[in-house]
Length: 336
Image (cartoon, rainbow, N blue to C red):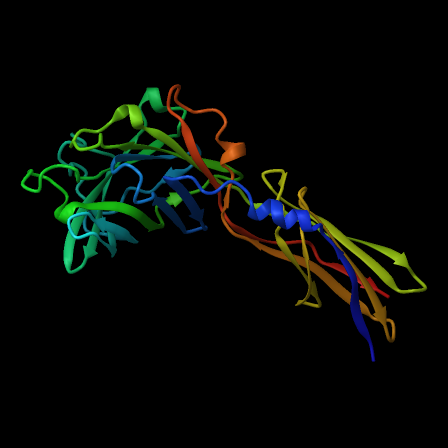
């Protein structure tokens, strides 16, 4: 009979405290996730934040866009939450993202013919709201943000109910997730998505350009490493250690699973520098064990480190996120 037991896992209690007590997510916030065939954009704000008038989400340089779909083609889905000011209630919405004719324009938001227009066909409490997303190359002035921009304008809320073009029931956007399939092809390596969010001036239907803020979302693969060192051949004690990083920076407070022959058996939490260590002792007959580390990291707030310098002078960067990921280390075979 054989068994492997954990002697100890090295991680400080201060690590957990530092992780949980980090900077709270600022609002509004941009989040981005991607796979080989789909891209998910999430934009969120607090109810207490100013009502959004316009958002520009910039596609990083290096991405390619497929805009060859014919009008009427479904290319994705949307879901989220609105707050109806007139009724003082929140309501979920859901719907499809459908290609519209390229000369479709939201009144007061855009004119002319665009590279593409994607219509967000949203169902809210039995009603349908059509919200165009205009897709265009960025202007020379905004070239530092990326290659393309996705622009959405929202109808005003803080105006008299009889005002033409007012948002139905005073509905304001709180959170929206939009997933597009077979539209974006991502470049290799790390990318940073950026957005500009412009609010309405309080009590008016006019956009407040001076209130514009910048949001960022970093989409970077994560990496977990694993090394082994025989501490004592006689005691059959093995030290396994490694690092967890994203964009070269250590990730603190993450839970790393150690797999033995493909099954999760032990767990260790990373230190402030992204390091982890597990020491195991084996009994019974000698045999070969395959070790591998696996970790899943949720989206993280990195505003303090990634929002230092604004892209456009005079426009504050108020939030930055790092996309979540799952990583596997190499496999190591050890006979002991």
